[in-house]
Image 1 (spheres, protein in one colour):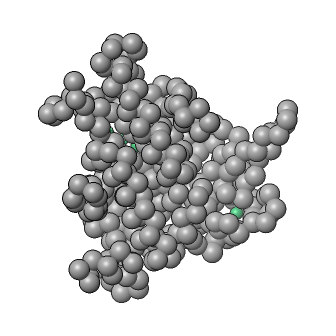
Image 2: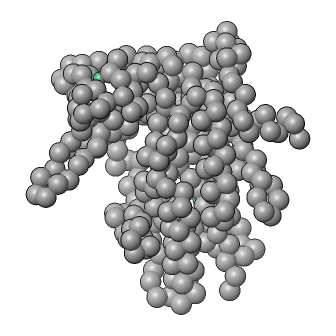
Length: 304
Ligand code: ADP
Ligand code: MG
Ligand code: ZN
């Protein structure tokens, strides 16, 4: 049987701000030694309160404008609760109920013509720290904790690895030329959701999610491997496909199951009462629009 690939992406981009999202420590790439960009707030000391970095809102709105999103006037933060040593508060501040941007669209030019990919939403959140393993010891570096991120979630509109890479390159050139992010390897990380379905079918198949992919080349290899695994599973019934989270091993070129897909309820999301809702009024929105640089890609479109 012939199958069609269906892919949706969740892309995390570290923003190029001077400081972190909720404190005045240096932002992305500012530390030179482990834990030299850390304060009581971003290292999770009891009783510390977050203070919103205005620049993060402006860069998230700028990204939303570039991706033709609705900019929501009212936007709020939520706590996503889980325990892991790189997350000192045991919750991540993110947005689930009222994300800053929704319903966008980006047009890709591929070898097969153009394709529109819908953007479901863009939300703001803080990054986690980094674990470093060495021999029998593990170390934690909190320099990255609370570095601002935007997460861009697409609808499942990609149909090939080529389209995915075209999209990622487009985001990268847009974001670099507009000062949103340098998008170096590691500053742009994707969760890749994949399913396959018989050609002509309108229903979606079972999807798996490959977590935390940083290199475009690896993303392409991972998609090809995972799509083939799905097709073989359906065609020869050698294994049952289950909705789960997987990781890609660069050396073997294969994906491996990590855990069953967690659901929203697993994280006990609730509104972060320490942060006021952000209201983006017309005057502020106009100011952000006026300051929005023209991205390379838009410039190219204007000359076509
Ligand atoms: P969840 O709440 O489980 O994270 P979302 O609806 O937010 O699910 O979707 C997460 C990502 O998975 C989105 O990028 C979406 O496009 C993608 N996705 C959803 N269903 C499928 C599918 N059947 N095949 C491929 N990708 C999918
Ligand atoms: Mg999701
Ligand atoms: Zn700090």
